Amino acid sequence: MRKSSWPELVGENGETAKTTIETKNPYLDVEVVQQGIPIFLDYRSERVHVFVDEQGKVTDVPKIG
Image 1 (cartoon, one colour):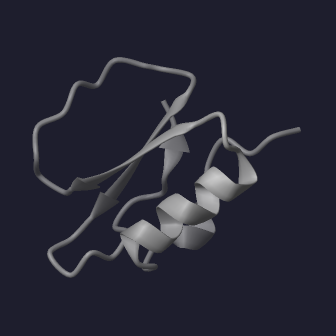
Image 2 (cartoon, rainbow, N blue to C red):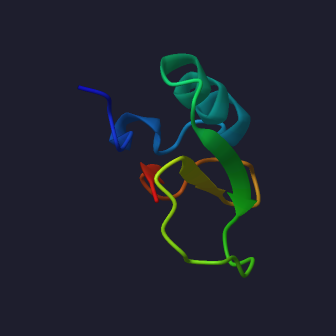
């Protein structure tokens, strides 16, 4: 079974988290997003948002959707 969330990446560098997720599942579209920037919240089964703070650290659990 493939993972749908990556809680272990909270606090990591956003670009590193993106690479980790893409390596484990190359079929996902992984986007690093600055926390607070408006985004579309529609559900997409092939997308993962990696939210980062001003220092580029992951702030929320990245998950499919």
